[in-house]
Length: 389
Ligand SMILES: *Cc1c(COP(=O)(O)O)cnc(C)c1O
Image (cartoon, rainbow, N blue to C red; front, side, top):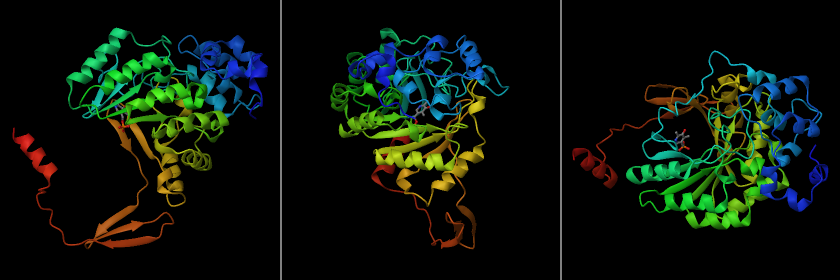
């Protein structure tokens, strides 16, 4: 149920509709405005008025135009419009489920893994996803981090020569102006020990107008630069979002996708299969499926872990390995991402491993006699020398 000419309903020209700034300025942020575009249920009316006391709502006119106005369970709608359940805080909910505050080095940097950091440059997004993991901060000010805080972040990366990979995220860095964003990317790019830059953004899905030629011309100067985006449902593929992704990929930017497993949105193997096909058709690599985190007010989105395992199991063998993401639980407390996979290795006995395929046919693999000698490759020699020093 995608509207053919959504700009008509908004009383603007197609040109305005296609301007990302118009989309941001006209985001739906109040109950009154939302009611003009969607027939809300009682549950949603209570949800919006209660939830807005604590969390922000903002829906781009574009993303709102994908909502089925007659289906309360529309997957687009569930991600965009607060429901009454969002006011409930379960006993397992945590403000900061991933322990990011503990791993923060300053206002902008989360440093958990040895070789890479998260660089959070804004708390603003095009749309505020109802299932946001970082909702303790995202959308709180709907603004970018101060220049001072961003400079502190750059300084931290400069001082730490082990950091090879900088993941610029937020919020959504692509809601910044081109020149603001370029200044940050350029500063990171110039640090000699930084080898790759990644940007996390949901704009191809929620604000595809943002991916302009001017933006991709800027980004391509800073290769190797990767983009990770966040498609959750096949309905999010539209001519607009596909064009946005095409522009990124045509600029030589590898695009990956991080899906969150969400009850009623995509907790179904057929929805996920369709989603990963759409991803690879658009040259997007399905990177992660996340188990939904323990953030406040989102228990109604969580599933059992078995659902995720079954989804991965339903993909493997039936579809190319290219299309199969890694299912992970980001460990509560800050343990990082932990891959969860179906078991294919059944046992080891008599020098053989017993394995099974996707059809549960059993196979044996006899292992050779093999004694692991101390490796003498040039990289191990270097590592050993460093350890001795
Ligand atoms: C997810 C995450 C990263 C990046 O992890 P990759 O597996 O390399 O994509 C880095 N730092 C933090 C704190 C993260 O949560």
